[in-house]
Image 1 (cartoon, rainbow, N blue to C red):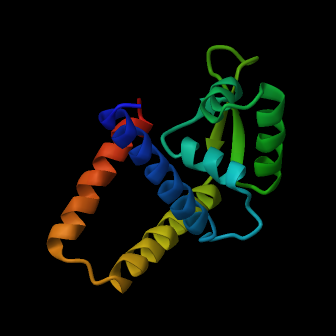
Image 2 (cartoon, rainbow, N blue to C red):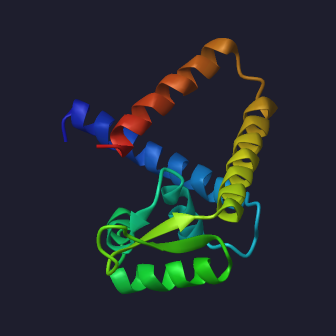
Length: 145
């Protein structure tokens, strides 16, 4: 590898390790301990509006039958409901309930607070915090490609 390739590779390795460790730490912060990460991800996805099971499956990169099982569990828990499409009763949308929204909101707040507390432990300077914000924007750009 050339020097720029080495820098790119080592940066990728460092980011992967840091991201996985941070994600693992944040996933432990939940409003409801019985809710799996997969179930939480579906609820979070539905916050932007109702979706058909097929679209949910694509977004979460699982099969339609797997997503159907996930939706069944969430519906049984009262966190989502099935809503028939107005134009085609054979088509069904999945919609988050108020209880589901409350869990997502509480979990997000809990995770944000945990991360803010972790950052506060290091007494980062304003410059370092701005650098972290810039890095977060770059990471989001890579994640959304």
